[in-house]
Image (cartoon, rainbow, N blue to C red; front, side, top):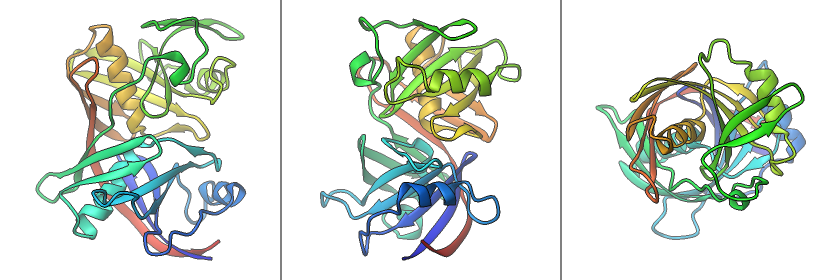
Length: 278
């Protein structure tokens, strides 16, 4: 099977987009996705966005999301922004469009002078443990998580996919690899979890590093940025619009509060195109 792909950068995230709207073929097996995702010589990606025809005529397209380890996940904020750019800018369907994702409908807007900045409505955050999913006796703003060498206090929520946010004094000294891996596979997260390490610099700016489930640390994570801002804002530590500084660049996250949607915006760029035989 020959696949045409577009490689993009969503504020540091390596996104591979395969547009299957004309054929709607099934994606490759997990082992093949894993091989492609970790190929250091050709493609390599953090997330594969498998774009298909929409189920509803009001939508531009639907998509599925696969991590570099071949696992299918519910959502990818920066991947959604890249898909929106491809459809809105290149296909001429923008500047406002709707996408269908496993986590629900995503509203997207192309912004900026050259429409190279994309904002997406990621929906309202979910805090109910069973819906994240997270094993807990009831909902709380903070939980204590027992690890092998320490106990960490965490915020837990879903942005269409599960997130755990840990406060740190500095992202530079945070033990992202060790603690991130331990939390990702903790028994209280039955579907594993993305782990964010957040340092609040002031009410309108944070620094963040993210260990993504099935990937490891990445240069950026859109839903991780949303989760961090929601966690901080829920505790009245942040304003309703926050700049999130990640190793791969800056994202903006806006959240009006309980029950409201979270908006994520940032730049995207194309880094390559080609065809591969899978």
